[in-house]
Length: 605
Image (cartoon, rainbow, N blue to C red; front, side, top):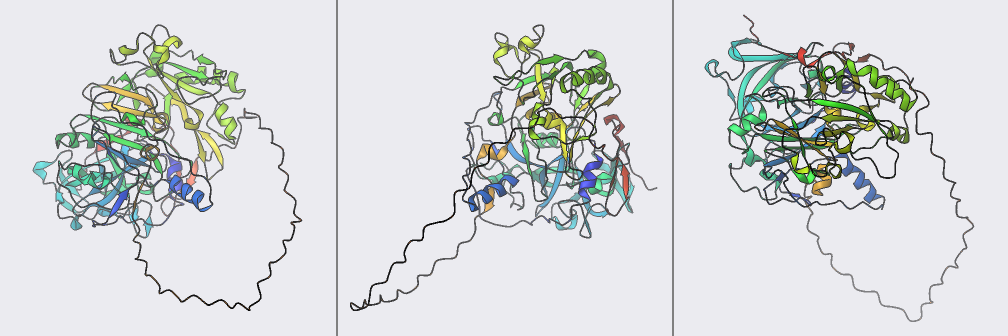
């Protein structure tokens, strides 16, 4: 996982606490939710478009009707659980409820690491204390959970026996990063589940209970999770919005693997579908969906196509065969009809472009590719846009943004997985087809400008978050995963890719909220009707006064601005930014590579 400086800077400006609610019995309803025949469990968001719709209703404006798609499973495997993802400061997180009664801990979903960890009561200055609140929740209180276990030294699942933060004989481990961030933890175990209502804990439901269409059955998917109880955080882990991290890498201790071992999901599969908004609300900003045990194709706008995962374990790695820039933008791999969207192949050496492999890392905000791409990329960019490509700030109108080139990645397929489309690959969205007749079943993955350009609300400009700076490997972060549902199929050693808007709430047509208690209406006694006086004079009607105001004239339509930016020389982003309380400035590290992440074992002795 890579953390970026701008996230910490934004975190430093946001204060206030959001304590998770304790377990309680409460009556709620799930408005408009559906369940398919495979038993997909759907969990709600508290998205910001809910506020937008409420405002529209208050103003008497029309609220667009939400679409509902029929349930289907292209790969034939049941999706056990579909839960909401929320947007942090550049990363995506999910609700993890831990303990008896459950306590909420929000955790970044990270395919680039394997451990789940979050701050516990003994954590020192870790961003969750009431006087310096950066995280969404207070620390996890072990003593308040009847089911919490501190792992004994002869049962360490990841760390080794030692001392940590004054504690003796604990299973300790941690993670550190080249740019200075790190955390240390001891191993704990407790009952946990993901999803459910965003701000309300659920009473425990026995495993195997038929979930029906009620999201309150999320706790039926509870299991005993081994995790890190963090007692020390440094750097950006302290100031991020999410409380902790959920490791989804292909290792034994990953969250999905523990869920499988506990027989909660039947297959070693999970899916991530990311979206993004320009602003983040502390209470929860809609940002997609996570599916455990399979994929929910109701989220898909194209068939799921399969790429080869070139690594048997560890990080999920793909091979990019070719790379293109497409004039005129566009979101889909299929060009927009009626638009002159010319696709230009970049003259890049395939071996140098991939190096040791390009990893899919959901916990990294940005995308970092080989510097071997820089020359051909910048040359073609300037031919199309007219100005040089860089990572400086620039002001863009929506029209200018849409006109910027869309980046296309041609990904090597999993052998045999896409052969059913051999006869007519041009008719299938997401296949190379005639773009590369020698490899027609390669997968085309798009990265439009709305994904690689990011709005910096503090400095009021856009910045490209695609960096061509890496050595012998590449990292496709969250911004390159957006707009697709990625299925990580571990046993088949492949990655499924389908286009999607990743709008969980749009799919299910509702959100979870407690039903307001309406007090009974008390009937007031009827007053006797007044008797009419036949001799009373009739009321005079007021004469109608003609209006003297004229209808305002509608101004003529304003011509749209030039779709291409006049210059790519906006203000250069400041590489330093304020962080509250601790270091006043922290230098941004754009060269922190995934390989710089390293595990460490703590021992005070």
